[in-house]
Length: 120
Image 1 (cartoon, rainbow, N blue to C red):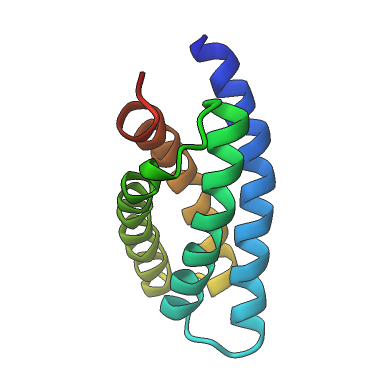
Image 2: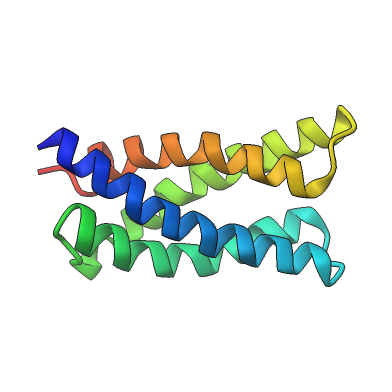
């Protein structure tokens, strides 16, 4: 079961990552500060991700779990901002910093959603 969920999470996660990173890159492109670009893309991503991850990965789209999902994504938001801030301090640009942060946040997101949000 874990293997199937992980494969589904990776596939749906790829879609969610494209969605979230596209928003982040768009916000950076139009001149929004990286912190707010992450913030706004996270908020929009949470709504999109809750539906796709809940329904297609964990087969549970009970909206009563949305609060836990938001809390899990709040943790990933903090990690994401920390990674981007660190990498910017090392001279990386906002685009590559954001891309790298999303990879790490995705792994954390799977663990949080599986074991804290959609646990059986």
